[in-house]
Length: 240
Image 1 (spheres, rainbow, N blue to C red):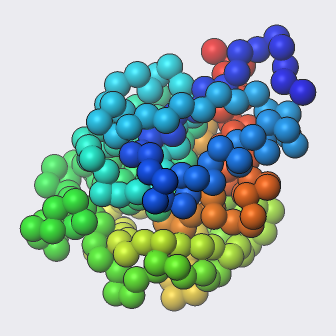
Image 2: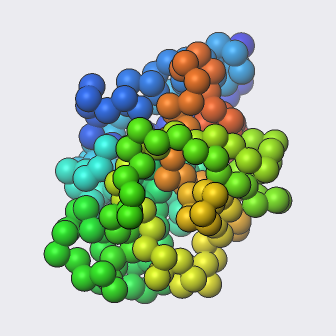
């Protein structure tokens, strides 16, 4: 049951909602399962990308969902920056993962020309933080190895997980070391060593995955990473 002594945790679902995006259709049932099964008091609000550039400080969590290219790259990046700088629990999946890397490259690493090749195909390779994958992961499922001691490992309770993807873009390996040097930790990789999870250890809860945990299972139970975000949101609401 919800704790009547506290306001519901407000979650911003950032993305351009569409019935054509499977993960968007999954989110309501996942959040309802967290309410019913875990007793988490959650209020979720869809925030279109063009409206995401302000007001994130009023939320207890920010989840940047798949569906890129977004109508407003700048709006999505502003939402991610607000969560990162404001200590607001953050989850980015698929396009959210890609844009979390882009925001970090620009605003932390100082790569002013950092770009996303899907958003701007004219971006030079040396400036692109997100590039086309050598092989598309659309519809792919595969194992991800999890770094011990990471937030992902704690939430999953395992050193491996199966992941479902629906993407054609991923991190440019040429920029991974620079992102790591500035504090981004890469805590999940596929069997070939390609980055699949990123975290900010100094942040209360900052997690991004190239895969889509919202597609796990039949939608009746939230993936542990999503449950982790919801719990962090409730903690944030209680601290406000």
